[in-house]
Structures are given as structure tokens and as C-alpha cells.
Length: 320
Ligand code: G3I
Image (cartoon, rainbow, N blue to C red):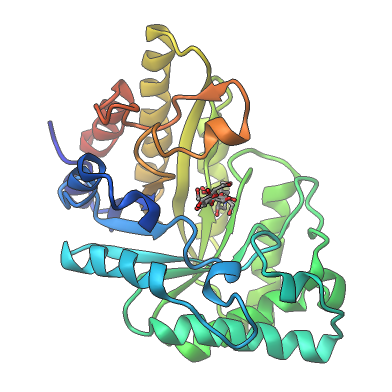
């Protein structure tokens, strides 16, 4: 069967990739598939570059995990997306427990973004600079950043990232943008506002955590096109398609069709640069521990065997 990254590139996309992280690198079978660049041409570290790991104490950076993921990518000819710089979750206690004002939080965001981005200047394809800033109803999420600085924290972070690496693609990454409604509308407005004020923004990541039976490829495509119409690129950044367990053969067949449709949307949108699955195997998927009773969301099963979903992705990349 065709390698998914080979197929993606032959179709004119930049990459097909996967989330991964160092806690999985001791698993020989997993790593053997992971290192196959015909299948995966891109890595996203699933955790190591989040604030609590990368700057656990103020001004003290730790790139041990991120550097290991980067080395694995680099040695096997892959590109890496950095994930992520400013997010309400996985913050160290020195951020969550402190009392901030606009001035000292601004410099703290700038130092954090500068520290992470400059460590990798010239090495990464993209950074998820701001992660999940919106509520599903389209308002800004209340967190330490928004509550202290309003939405200006987004441009503060993006400007600092651009200053630290002139060429890396700067993304805002978000979930539930795959459906029509207030959230995608708010993201389109946010991009317009950032552009109007001259803030650098290159791409929007559509996380794409789907539930079997709940995809709407038409809306997904319209939403991507609403972003690319503003001159940005888009990417599927955290793809999975979870199933209520136990997954039947019929479920896995439907999942194959859905993976094909979803990746087909990226194919149909010229500005969609690539697809990343949020780890390639059900064994390391985040789904079962977060959504009780759900799983089987990834293109490889727990035994590291290809599922029908794999063929669905391949079919989307190879259909003309
Ligand atoms: O590594 C420790 C392990 O030593 C310890 O025994 C275990 C006990 O809880 O925890 C392990 O760390 C966990 C880590 O995943 C690695 O498995 C953390 O507790 C857990 O919080 C962490 O969850 C991650 C989650 O983000 C929170 O950061 C998931 O792996 C990761 O897949 C998930 O990814 C997010 C994206 O960043 C943003 N979009 C949504 C997506 C899914 O939630």
C-alpha cells in the first residue's frame, strides 16, 4: 500500500504527519512505523513544548523533550510543527497562581514566546502560537491571558513569535471550526481584525477531532475556504474520528469513508497544506482517557496494524 506522506506530496500537499512524543519513543514497534517517512513527513510534539514543560519556572526553559522530537524528525527527513505557545491549559503554577497586571503579563508572554521560538529559529515549519482562544459560542475564552489583556494577548504573542523567527508559519489552532456556526465566524473575524492592525498571522489549524457520524464535509470545506479567502493557509492539525466502543466492522468501514471525506476536504482546498493525525495508533490516542466509552479513533489499531481508515486517507490523496 502507498505511504500516506508520499501520497500527500504527490497530490501537491506539504506533508502527512502525526503527533508523537518522547514517552512513546521506547516502543520499538511504534517507532519503526513512526520513522518511516514514506508514511509520516511531519511531527507535532503532543506535549513537550507546552508551557508547563518548556518553561516550568519563570525564565528557566527546558527543551529536552522538544529537542528529542525534533532530532527524530530531522534525522528521518521530516518537518515539525511547534505546539504550542499560549494556551489556557498545561500552564505552570507560576503562571496560574500569580497575580498579573497588563504590563507584567505582556512581558511574560513575550519572554515565553521569544524563548521557545528562538530556540528553534529556522528549524520548524510552523508554530501554534495561540491555541484554542475561542469558546464554542464565538466569544473569547476566559483565562489568565484574556482576563488580564483582552484579546490583545493574541497579537502580543504573534508579534513576539515573528520577531523571533521571520520565516516560521504562525498559526492559531482551534477545535470545532469544522462546523458552521458562531465559532468559525468568530475566527474569521479575528483573522480580519489581526490583519487590519498589521499583526502577522499565516495560518489557522483546524484540529478536527471528529465523532463517527457527525462530520459535515461541505461545512468543513466552506469554513476552510473562508479562511484561505483571507490569504491564509490552513491545515488539519489533530485529526481523529472517535467511535463508541466496541467498534464494529461496520463502524470501521464508516470511519474509512469519513477519513476519506475529511482528507478529501484538504485536497479540495488549495490552501490546505497538510494533515496531522493526533497520534497514529489507537494505543497512544488521547481519546479513551478523555471520553469514556469512546476510542478506536486513529488510522492504526492498538496492535499497530493499519485500519480501514488508513485506506480512506490513501484514497483521498490518490484520487484526482
Ligand atoms: O507523562 C505523564 C506520566 O508520567 C504520568 O504517569 C501520567 C499520569 O497522569 O501523566 C502523563 O502525562 C500526561 C500526558 O498527556 C502524556 O500522556 C498528562 O497527565 C496529560 O495531561 C497529557 O494530556 C495531553 C493533553 O493534551 C493535555 O495537555 C494529551 O496527551 C494530548 O494529546 C492533548 O492534546 C491536546 C492538544 O494539545 C490541543 N488540542 C486538544 C488535544 C487533545 O486534548
